[in-house]
Image (cartoon, rainbow, N blue to C red):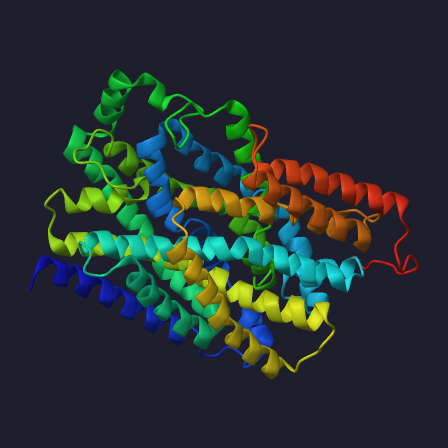
Length: 482
């Protein structure tokens, strides 16, 4: 058996294991929308830890983060910064959302906000904004998995076929088991990622430089500015502090408001489980440290990769490692991609049906019919994301940074609905629309050295507050239940 065949065999075995775990996870869950989308609100502490950790740190972690460390130096540390800060709000937001979910049957973010602010159109717009962020985020995962298979099999499996293979497996277990399939496969994938990240993150610096310390000493001696914050831009220039800080801020704000992460407030067994998950969550970031070591280990490696995102598989191919070892690390990178992709796909389908059709258009469905339509929506969402992944050659972390711009705009209406009694549906709706338009416009036509999402947030908050205070709500006599 050739080396490529051994790598493919290991990857095939891992995909088969993921498929088995994902399908088995659906046993015992009720045959309803609440079971498929919220897991009957019974997810315990271990699953919550991995479903939140593995859901966020994905293909961008295993491929994009080392790519940034290799090409942009200290700029990669901003991933740690927003990761540490981003989940703190969930300590307060999560339990509040969970209480309302159990009381009123909410299973999505937009459904909760629309009910609190008495605005059906708001649910539709929030669903559209969520999809605007989800499509590139899911495409990112697909592109990452395809890159890994293409590079490590030396082109035997092209990127587009690799992405289709991996996400065919994801589609099957999400279709069968819903959120519990996501939870149990994320646990398997999270454990796998942690072990492989630390193994490779310590081995590569040692093999190439004699250790982590000597590695950084060599880099500092050759190019001291490479390790100095805020780091470099994609074209090799110096990244400004305003761009760096605004990127950290926007991504930290958006972190807790990713709909697929926010949705986990509705699946937890109790508020105590939610709070414990937030407290333990920073420990998951320790898995990012060795990932960054991998990228720094590749600095000065000859020959360099064609793209920064390929530095990890590129190093593995050029270090004469056994095919079995290469296959295992390939599977680890796929685990990183799948652990986010499955949650995104599941949440996106839930949002289209629950927020767009049932809440937004006021078209009720039976629990079984809703589950059926959520399943059917998996197919077009996967197809559109696949086309984006194949057609648009965008770097992985850059794609993620763009996605955080629109998703950050969900923060003001959610916070207003939960914690500000004066917030109105009109204010939240127009704030979200204006903030999203501003974000997209300045992402396409930047004029200031800041993340476009920051400009969108400023506009969003101003409109939300101004309209809520100046324009009466359509049903001002309605009271908001805590």
